[in-house]
Length: 220
Length: 342
Image 1 (cartoon, each protein chain N blue to C red):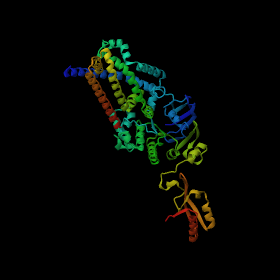
Image 2: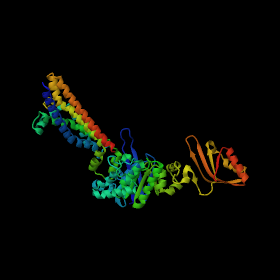
Image 3: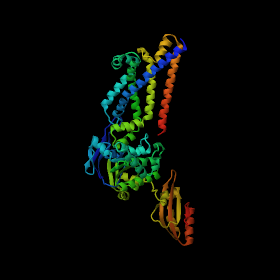
Image 4: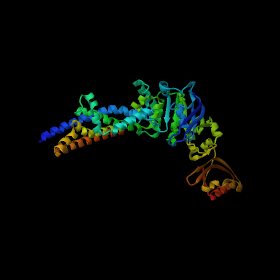
């Protein structure tokens, strides 16, 4: 196999990884952000709108989803993928289980970040007559922005790891490439390249995330 | 705005490892309009819960709160939010938004009321001038000193032109000088805006330097109330007496430095300083018996240091020159430090 072919394989796989990670990050945020906010404000002890029953139900759902092994979740979610993207195999189909697997993780990350906001500051906002919506949008989210950025960075890196398992349903991407060519076809060079590219991507995302979160904190 | 509290009760239920707490146990108070009303109590006395009830952050188990003649403790939803928007509150830890600059903090209460942008702009400038921080408009909160933070918090609390200002231990995190400057700012604002100010504190100095009326709270009940003068002249409850006994000396004027209280501005030619055990000795009366002189104490005070006490007296000693000199020599021989005021 010549260098050109390897390059084509690796670049195609990289694009697939990007596709999976970018979209599943977006969708998991879309699902996880409201869930995390709900978890924070409905907390019976510390929430601004304590709702013990709602909190318990959400907590259970999040825990159950988080304890599923990803590979099983993928298979269980075949029907849902078929409904949403028309197929249960391929890169696009993988985005569905990836998003759903990451959403409860995102929810916990967001919940933790929001709960770090000084309760005194929230009380001040309440005493000034803020509505719940205003407290969420104008106090909780902006005050916890550095932690939120850290949490989202963590999510993206987790999703890169998960996406490597997508090969099981023909999802493609770098992890798939490493297993199919490197392991199953005895091409250690391709495996090494795939792993190095993943490493570089993870390293870059961590760097950007840390920089962003620092620059936000530094202005405060 | 006059505030009336009728038989307020708030109990926190027992939880795991936490016994039941009667935080506020049947409190009735009349807080008159347009003045500074102090509520003093030790930590755990129930004053924080009380202010949360009066400021509509919590609802009482029973009893009622009236602003003028309108009942407010049972407000809910939109009415509650509208009412809170016309209350100002400042806190011990300032509770400013770190995600906003000083100016943006002041803008917050205006933003949540959907105030037009240009109006917010001019009101923020006006408020920054009021608290003397016009130059710190774009400063991040972390760059402000404690006193500046509280000034910004005051400006923020006043943004929506409230009729009541609640100060919850507002000076407890500040040093004595900054406390004085914040208190005088609150007094100035109170007079300017005809505000009703409710000041919760555990510092008798704050009551002395800012309030006209005071209620002493202990174990969830009001144990004593009246004008600050009355309370200082004839304290009745043990808690009040305890507060007065531990009162830090006044630091406002120069002659009050070092904990010395002067009855009059005149006299006091000799400053006598006693150290250690001498503060217990009747040196002065012995001196008066031994020599043909008379003495008059103009001012005096005792300071407690970690390992000793230092007493200071400003006295006039009169009589024949020779006798006075002999008396002074006697004092020195007894270990009293004598300095003569020329």
